[in-house]
Image 1 (cartoon, rainbow, N blue to C red):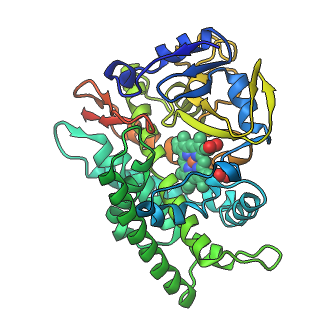
Image 2: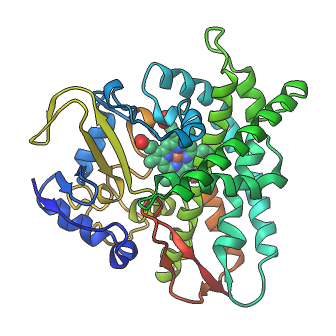
Length: 387
Ligand code: HEM
């Protein structure tokens, strides 16, 4: 297997990781990434297969469960109930309860509200050059997810701060300060959600939180800890990736002078420049896949963004084609952990981008955008625009 060295924080890689992915994919479906000490899948077929193979999963095998330092305990206590970190049967139960409350009817009913919000934000754009992420991209997903969940919208700033601090635990460079901030954020987030749940129990509404509280499956309600974790997961997962896809998408369209947006354009943005590149799986039993023998306890990473540029799956994958043919892209993952929020994210992206270009047809880049040096989110530092 090809072994490659590539620092995930090297500036050229941060700005364009795709050249490295192409080099890695040329030698086959899998390569060994020295800097992570991990076998990684780069082809569309390998990524799609590994994400769906039930002999692999997100939860560590019991004997491999990581020994987290005691000071990080409050953070991992919350993670312990996250469907994203669990496998069946707990994953099935939690995901089922969420999906019942997260119906497609409830999501599509949000369309008019998303459009009103986008228009209000566009009305308030400052004159001259401004950061579109601050004025638009960062606001839409967090406001919509707070409304959907039924948590007070005026706390959106706190939620963003807590969420950023918690997500930082997954970045390449992790320090004691990052761990302490994540623990503080987890505790504050927990207290806030527990208070909101108590209020909602007294005063039910037509929101996701009320439905989650009431959700029953075989008489089995979500426990308070599960409810808290599920809300945190939905709030965290529910905005960061969408923010960065709005940024990456606007950049792509402005650079190519494309201004007409529909569902197919959104899909091509998600294929061409997705916000999340790497998801790792544990191996539960000895198995040979793509000419490599995996042992129980091994880990393998699926490089979603590399799969999306696989020439065996897409013709001329490095070109942006609004009417592209080909298999579904892997931006939202695959298999049992496939993104719960994909329909909401797609709706926000389509309405957000379409409203922007319809209302601001002369919008242009005010400076060349740069990607931020955080490999766990492939998104822009800022997106200065004018017009
Ligand atoms: C463009 C935006 C988004 C992208 C690219 C994205 C991507 C992903 C990916 C790749 C996974 C699977 C991770 C894995 O298999 O290991 C995932 C899972 C998840 N996403 Fe998203 N996501 C987005 C938006 C959202 C939104 C808006 C929500 C919620 C409202 C959300 C909630 C979740 C949840 C709860 C999971 C865990 C599902 C499970 O473990 O069964 N995501 N997302």
